[in-house]
Image (tube, rainbow, N blue to C red; front, top):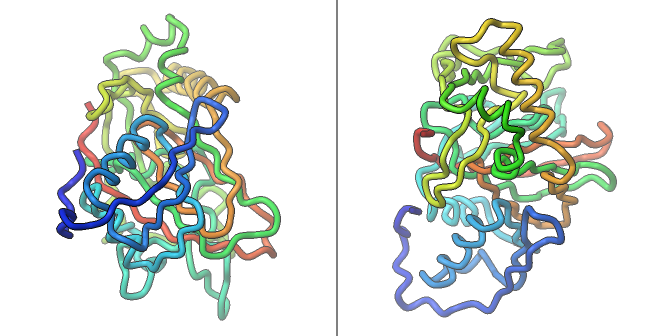
Length: 297
């Protein structure tokens, strides 16, 4: 369950808002809620349940400060600090800047975040519960984010693949694809020894159980998963390729087209996601907070 609020909510007035599911099987938008105001316990419980039910929720038109984003994120748990400290917001290290903007010859944020399908921080012993991404500047075209439901992926997985993966573990590594295409203009800075020590590879179950809903989900991704423990390399590659292809079938995916001031909150225990990219000359900047989860089981 989420961490207890740092703010007393006993006397906070309720807000009138609507949770409106999207037309597909993934995602909902929350309309009429103002996150610049503290939520009382009943309103927070509705938001929390919507997040569990729909896996990704979109709070529309949120004109909130970085500190307000941090405070709301902390209602769900401890916040995780990203290893790329050069891209953390000044005076707010809980926020990772996701941006393609270059100023004075230097990127101000992580410009190629989400290039491959992944679940945030799956390479940690305690991967992320969820992430919140708040739109600051959006391009006039492109910039969509795709989310694939890994519960649906498991529910529809062919029997032979279920038998091949159930009870097995896979290794996750932050550096699995870190240096692919690395060059002088790369968004990915060379990691220091200290940074590398923070992202030592870990092993997690391929099929994990959601700690709050009890539902099973696949927990592998092309972005961070390197191999299946105990299988020959070629067999591991083939099996992972089949799992990746099945996970991102169109019927499992919600494509988010950003609107000004959207705050998107997704469940990394239930989804993987992908940044679709935008033309390089169009500015894009978003602020991300990441909430620590439990060890997968």
